View 1 (cartoon, protein in one colour):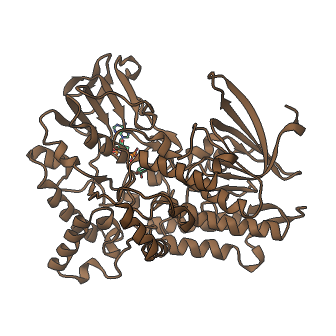
View 2 (cartoon, helix red, strand yellow):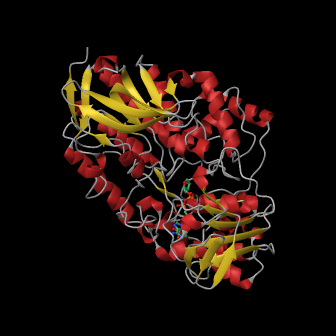
Length: 550
Ligand code: NA7
């Protein structure tokens, strides 16, 4: 393929999940010629890959979908917290309305991108798998490049001695085979008790003959309180304005969920009043106890402890064994409540009352090695048919770094972030013109409701591209000072909270050797929208702009 034959698009997007699909829809309305490169054989992003048993979203409908009334018609979620298959069907529905697949190359993994500073375009390299399994490399050019690659970045598998020796099946939660795994009467180990681990454990516990959970840190899970939604109930809510009101509210709350912190301090209320609130939040289910709580729960250690104690005492009642109570809901919290994203559970704690389910606390009984047959810990040896690594991801930064994006000086994003992550608004990086990130580091995406933050960023991109067209802009770059300002703001709000006190992927501390820093903007959605809007004021003086588009 000669350079002349490489197709030129206005915009090359990566990833066919919520981020790129929303942005594509906005950009098409401006008559921009766009293409999405997606490595999976279908859309859905993380919902395509995460097909492990029990995979389910933790955000309640109707607000876990694209906030566009045209797309609400013709699809009704059947559960308050939809499962993975239903979410994939939702993407098919969106495709039937928008036909985004017309502009998507599936099976195409981006392996590099290079900025041409003279001609002002990105050359994006991809590798595509053909039907016979062969790989071919290709290139496209885009005047603009948008990475809508989600949060999960790179799968994380801990390095444990002898892992390669295990003769049974070893699988990471995000590499679960699309054809499934027969778990009936199998001896299974699950390593990790984050969102994926909890969902897997509660789903497979009744099927397996033996289930051993290797836990390093207890997850402060909240009751999901799942319920069915009927099409007539959904329809009524679409027509009577309930949907629209719910979506409008997401733009006013801290994390884009349908609930928000209370204005009063926890200490301003009596013990009885607080208990009443906590109780009702637990009964309502979902993230209420996490994010519909008093405003000082994540800034005041004592307030946080009080919420934890309520959670702990409630959960302990569901666990029979005294020793397990202490493992799953310890008297003293190992990190402040809610500073790691709590998982929503259905019957997680009851699983540990089953005779064939046991838990190994890795703090007192660490894994020494894998063998051909199973796992040896300090005090124990167990044999398994299947070992599941629910050990998470090198999130937020690694996806961008792995795409091998280089500017005209051959500097990569990793080089730029070698002394710490720096972005403007979590969306642009100095020295990398015309490159935008959706769900990038230093944005509010990881903390909150994915489709909502993707739509906020997509709407901002819509405004940017309106200006690009109107003002004939060929190059748009963030200034070093703007990047420094935003990075400082991210760090400051993070530093004033209790969030740095937990080892979490929110700050990279889940990955050995990764720099620990604020990877999320926790100033809240309203403040983020304000910052995005403000950046486009004053004749775009916050940006370095080159005009001349014909
Ligand atoms: P998470 O939330 O990062 O959870 C990973 C889990 O794996 C967590 O319990 C970790 O323990 C555990 N882990 C990680 N490394 C090890 C080693 N070496 N040994 C034992 N246990 C380990 O990933 P998920 O996939 O569950 O969820 C990802 C997010 O994506 C989720 O929040 C959703 O919002 C979307 P730790 O807690 O670090 O002690």
